[in-house]
Length: 349
Image (cartoon, rainbow, N blue to C red; front, side, top):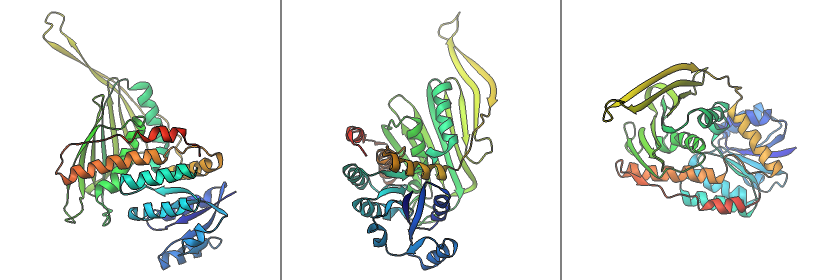
């Protein structure tokens, strides 16, 4: 059985801790946390876990093969680098780093040391998102556009703006649905209301080469919690609502346009309206599936689904989006990180 350590037990950490304890393929040997009260809480709940505030105890423990990092975003690069250099496999919460250069450095370290480096883009382990991709591939025909909403009344962050906090989810999902094809440009408008230096809401538009677009609305200053993605194509339209019991609704709707038989200059629009299908989804907890995938990747030496290349692509778009915010919504061209593809394909974990 593989032995794992966890670093950080703050907002998301307790969920990871609970899920790790549920797995029968690994043993949670140690947890590192700087907050005294949180350490005492974990000790009281999990007496068999070695709880400490010293990361060196994990780095120097040869029995520990993998580390799960759940700390604030600005610490991800430093902690991930320490763990990789100590020859530990790493699952780090998103984002991998706060800039592309740091993310590429971590990627290269993981390649050189043949270690699993995986990033917690948890929605890609959600059975509903996996099914959504399958439906798009099989039923939608020509893809037109995406429209995503991720809104809530809070939780307001003081370390990152709403773009860096919420957009990684949507960007990761969009890249997955687009088979990791990167957009060619982005423009983002951000607005600050509660804190002058951090944006509370953001409106983004992404464009791909084949005229596919995506609009993303992000906010932690909204009266209603919304997690919804609409996908529109030439044959069908799909609504993925993460908060609904029926998470996916497939609308058999389309609009065809044809030239009028008697008047070629006149266009006729045919509105086709069919049924709405709610496909059955075998739902399992995405976080648990993500952690299982991490353990499997270590044991089988296989490349993880949300590996460093996917994470670099997300950060590349985040970087471009942030530049657009700084320039008041100016459109920014996105340079592909596809140059990493060949090295990634040739590397063996």
